[in-house]
Image (cartoon, rainbow, N blue to C red; front, side, top):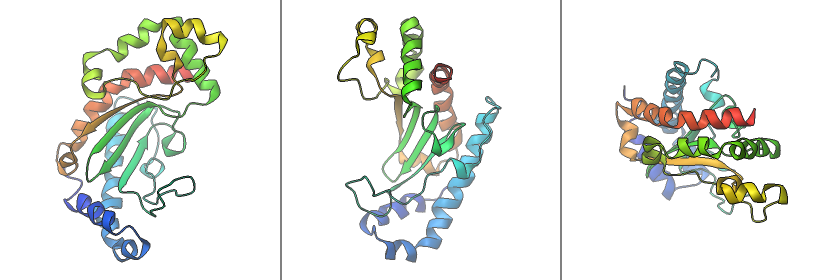
Length: 221
């Protein structure tokens, strides 16, 4: 099924040159038709497909999709609108990015496909480090799987600048313990947005990230 027309990318291309409220309001009906409504249908289908493997995922599309409005409070970019459309499909949805899931960002330039633990709390981070330190090979085996490396490369995240004494020995044995986030990123061409195989392709990414997401989910609980 094709969820989006070429105007998905066309809208954001024009918005890039007209990122102000007057233009957006004049094109609001187009935004609803080409972006907001089809994206909600698409995310609903992704949720249904994931539920075939994870029946505990009970969330509505509206609780996964982020606003197109740019949060300018703490950003140097004061443009009122983002040039992408984003959703975080997990048990916590967009309000809790510490819970591993699949994070999708569609723009005219690229499809970003991300997974892992973006913003663990202090307690969750301690649990992840503890689990890794007890059996580093188990985590490394997941990260070194051929499919994972092909689609996502490696784990990303900020690292500790000063390693607490309690973690120094463990960090020497396994540098991943120095991480403060545990996420990974894949990319696809924006041409996929209008493809009838969109959901199938993104579900392939979800299946590859699933073992790492499940490992991190168990660790933070």
